[in-house]
Image (cartoon, rainbow, N blue to C red; front, side, top):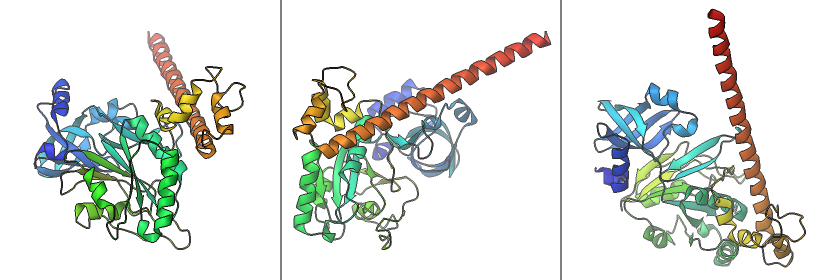
Length: 355
């Protein structure tokens, strides 16, 4: 096992030097279990914890290690290590933390490609695909749409679904596959390169675990059936895990996500809805909300059928989420700042009283 097998390269070695991590062993986090980590190094796998200093200096959950991270560590025995630092990430796939407004949950880091899975037989939803695309574009990750379970529908329906995706989503590869017959696997395997990291994203029951098992050639993940009462997938994967495939590609599996909250602050929505963004540049007012203003080019284009109405509605919903998330973050920062001032004044007054 070499570090290069885990995706290590010259850029990471430069970051290691810049962060003065030469005295530490380098490893990659391959799974996380409630702030205890499994890290893979040239010497194998070990369980790891972070130092107290790293924990104390963390400003938020984003400052803790995540699956995909490169970390500097010291080995204390053959199967236990201490993490002293994290190399800067070149990409971070994240979403709004479920039930915790204003907080971000990291899904995976240092990802080159995201495979966005949707099943052809159930729960097909282009709006959700646009959400995943926005997450990818915000993160700087290359998306690939994978339509799975085509063996459970006919060719006409598959072609219809493929066309509906391509009508709304441009310039993103779309691959239709069957985990049973392996149809489409040749196209999928052609994009998987040695040393590159791929992340599986999708709801429960779309075939992520079966796909991973097939690509790896081993029964690595338990697979589950669709519930007959709810027609929804059961959660089989319970945590994120990084796996090296036979051809040298690196794949991260994820638990199914029913909620994909938007945290976009890097223009991901504008990239996903590129057509709307281009029309928006023609609007009469710079602060146009593209909802009711006279002279709004976006609203006019929707009325003329030049912009898909369903895509437009999804865009407005996601923009509203982004605005709410950003206002919540600003509110949290203000509260933290006010609390810091109060604590500082309290210490200052206490010191005066002692004098």
